[in-house]
Length: 405
Length: 71
Image (cartoon, rainbow over all chains, first blue to last red; front, top):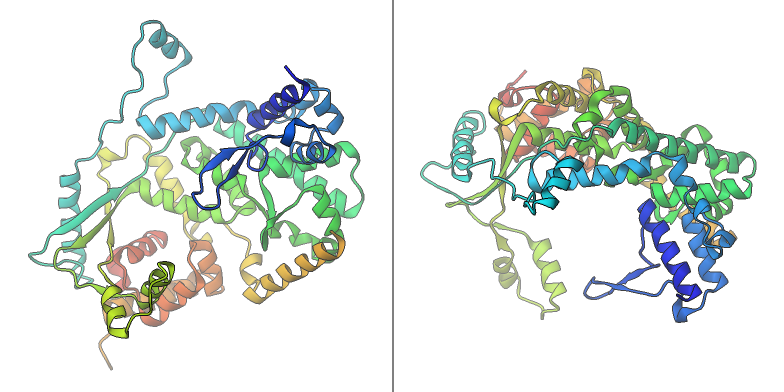
């Protein structure tokens, strides 16, 4: 195997074990079809300083260690943060329970199934009868019509009926895994502040870069700006001029969103834990609320058979523009913009549809409510920022990057 | 005085609930996960979506019918 191939394999293993985004390294996205296509890590088969530099910045592994295929150096974050050894397991449990709606088989069960060639990948059993859900939706709408006239259409039918609901997944090491993630976020904060107030050494610089890649850290007002060492250095004056007390309210840790830990029943074992999560990424309160709603209820979408169409000129204009059609008369436009929108209604689940997690469900419902009623507290800082303040921050950051970048 | 529509009554109730539980509409919007312009539209023009009222009732731990009571 050529040296370049060995380095490529080594780097790919690093990306895989830490779940780092391979975009721009191993694949690109076609502008038109949005399809992914593979690319060479080292174009032309040449290991250049430029490519090594960007790999090193993303992985937090030094250029020399990459060139030397130093596996010990590559594993250092794996050893430091327990998260990585647990996350793969969590993903497996997540996708199994999501796809097959059943208990994850143990290693022993999987081994027995493999020996006896048993199929353990059984399709999910439909838990609900669509026609029965539709009838329940009709009953609910009829009842709601007492307070909200028009909710029910006498003599009409529900068409294009669809429904969705949620279920918990279970992962016994959830708390341990999230604790390790918290540790990584706190370490990023520590390194970030150290860089602002002092200076990082090379090892710390590498770890900070790695944590930015892994935690997917960006400035909230400039989402295209990752907070790797180079950018923090450029923005050092800008960030130190901002109130240090609120500095992390401007920073977004996107990993907390895409890992979707709130789907895990064990996530709610410790309320302080959930509160920490929401304090770091306030958007998760909305996600948890939506999830909580959908585990207690079934959301139905439908159109009434006698429903009147509505007009949407803005949508029609955009649609026509995207088709590059010739300009239409206003009458034509009105006709083409008519459509029948979907209506939505929630129906309560029956106790038998809750499985055995009613206590957790009650707890989450309360956590999702207003703080005055025992719900999770969000910092009021971000919502005090007016849109102008955010645009102003965006412009000042861009200017700073242009000046010093 | 004009009789209020259920949509308007729901909007009035939302305004009252925000006042009781939050310091500002922005704070509520942030907490509930709703665009601030949607909050002010609901308050000023009424709430015309059944599922939105159901979600709000659930959030404030109330019954759907409570949203249409004049206080």
